[in-house]
Image (tube, rainbow, N blue to C red; front, top):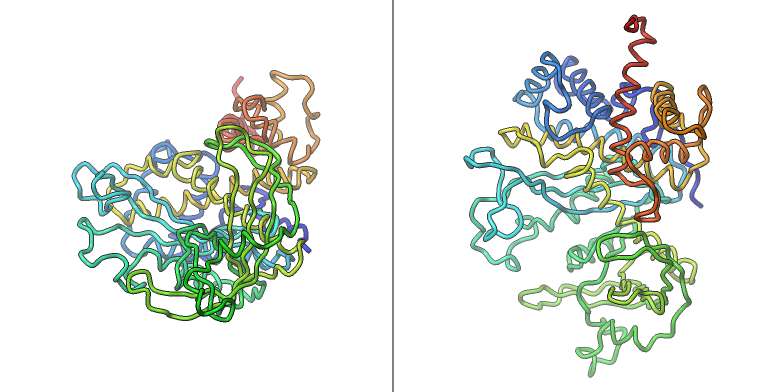
Length: 489
């Protein structure tokens, strides 16, 4: 049974500097001054997120200090990421859920490198010519989908020319797909180091449907769900040897009676209309034959559960219906457990909001104009920390809207938002009161242009971010006045 998350576990803050120290726990960047600079930079980014250093640090002295920090060769981006990882593990100690949800997902940060000397590499197809940094992250969440932070992170630059050895003949250690196994292992190690023994439940998309991942999942004490990409052959123990090569999982699913019907709320997106989807759920417990992709050599059989959720009767014309076939090692012996598998897999899409905020949304990491891989990577890790916090705040306001707003906002920010709102409206919460978290987030988003009419859904990152830009300026003035600065006459 999922429990309410303790206040400190979600990155809630009495003030932004305190949050920044919690978000980079035990920085250990080689010097106390370096740690303090990292906290100060993260504080500034959280208050005014932007993709470039000058857009965040508009005063000369802190801007120069930020550049020195990013260009310092006494520590690497991995040290900053390790501090971020430890902070996530420490937040997980306060969660009382039966399991934590992990999502591994890859992406890339585009970067303009006209001279070709910034240390980045090709992204996307080699023929297109795009350049930037490749990324893969393990995002950790509560069972309700509230982001706790990044459990592990990989950043790298691809070689300028593609490797000559065909992809399917390379060892796993020479492939980018190794992160499907290495990042969960690194996350588990970080949690163990902090004494967190809670089970992890990993959610992978179709790219992870490969035999090393499935074999590793079957041997793990944690749970794994992978969306099917390949219709695999049933193991010998589940079919007659004479016809086994022709009998595959999809064919077996078609002859299996449905376990029940699930209604799932679908959020709007690109090519996707918001709706309540009616999903027919089918469950099958099978042995699956695993083989290599290039030689088709048999490497072993694993026992898995297959849960299929196929939309029927609710898909709008012109859209593709939802149709998920999921390999899983989680229990699914009852219909309720099968429903949990489907609903938990749906949390995988939470990582898309983090990527949006990190790459092109409020944090806009792809706008960075730094000129070395290390500087870009350090800056990107700091921006990612803020992007995760923003997305976590928005999601928490949706699933726990009745919480008091001061679980996530300091008093100056609340007062600033109420002052700005009352300039245009008279129906806002009274000054000096603490509104609910859901009300304050909506109020701030309305300051950023949110009307609720275009999508019909809750506030998103863009309108909330625009509203926070206004609120933070007003909050800064309030802080200065509270500290004793004389207001202008």
